[in-house]
Image (cartoon, rainbow, N blue to C red):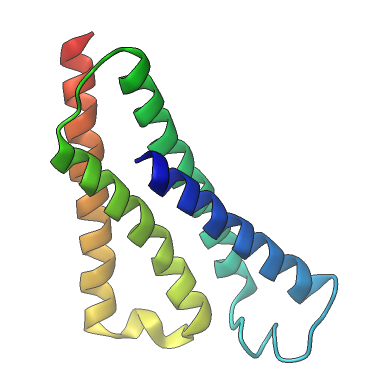
Length: 129
């Protein structure tokens, strides 16, 4: 979860730089070309930050409190925490993303993975307190 938190921070920074260059330092082909939906870029940026914060916070609290989280819950948090913001990233690049059945399944799977992982870790932490 620590490493994924760092990766998610890097993803958020990438979105921030893309957003900055697409709006304030226009590069031909970036906004309207590569970036199809600026609003979804901002949502991806925020979601990467939120997921980074959740990964790092749960990791830090468990470490400081000496709570052993199940490795499976940690993997679910890490994978779900990464795949969840990618929903916005993919949709930013492919505007018709939401029209595909695979996109709906992917979106539901990312929510399910992260929810199961966060609830599992939360219950373990709650019971250890």
